[in-house]
Image (cartoon, rainbow, N blue to C red; front, side):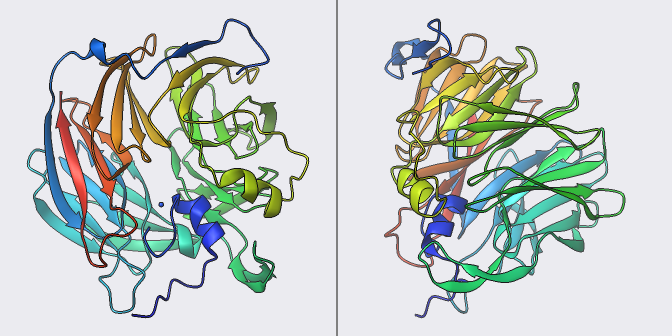
Length: 395
């Protein structure tokens, strides 16, 4: 069967999804930086209850709604001709049974939820847009276009039509009534700012470097942190929309971020994807860049200085991370190893490792129960049409 993906270059697919499109996804600043080894499995507390269901092709992010008692799961579907369309699945959070479906015209990847307003925002990475869903009626309201297509040189040197930038992550800023969406490209990523009252792009902020991927919000102090793949964390004032700081960090592949409001520290998965150094040099034109680490860790960053204060060893290719402040837990999906690692978030000591083969991807939490939800990607050689899975973990 002919593969049709909208002709995205395989290098661009790798930076968006950590996979090919046909399969879809030491500190020099301080001597006190410490390392927590992933071998400390003796700290396991109990055996969790793990429930796993096959759901659909192309599963990516998910989010839980206390208001509607629903787990929303984004399925981008397949990129094969005649395949199932993209869908938002509504799951019962206790049983993972399907309660409903919301069809999408554009492929859905990222999710962020404004539960109070009954709005679900869906990132359409490959169409450079955001779909707005009313979760009270389960209807699509509108689509916000972030970028337009232009002719530009692909990473392989060919001249082709691309969007100027591709959004991977969405961050809701309820306080300032905005959504922030880093738009990645190889030479100069941007930050899209969408006004929630007008549902239009309010501002496009340039200067975010090679492949801006992660973003996390400090709502109390009006700060948004954005990370890229050239070892930088960029701070944006969410009230004025001005870039206030660019910190150089001793880590290369800061793919996802989480802000610890208690410690005022930024945690980042440093993925360790072996393809990145070549992409940074060839597609990003950063020929003089010196790699800053081997990855396969979570780094704890002082966002004011950029100092890496702690390096936490993980499984291979850590991807997503989530902090449950109420239960003092840090969860990390290790995509390359097929595991979930659980840490005490007060000192980042390892508590347990849970096998979730093949490739655990994204995380969501039910804050009332502490139940954790994970999307699981298939192996690259899995037969076309095979469904991917959602897992509920009860500790």
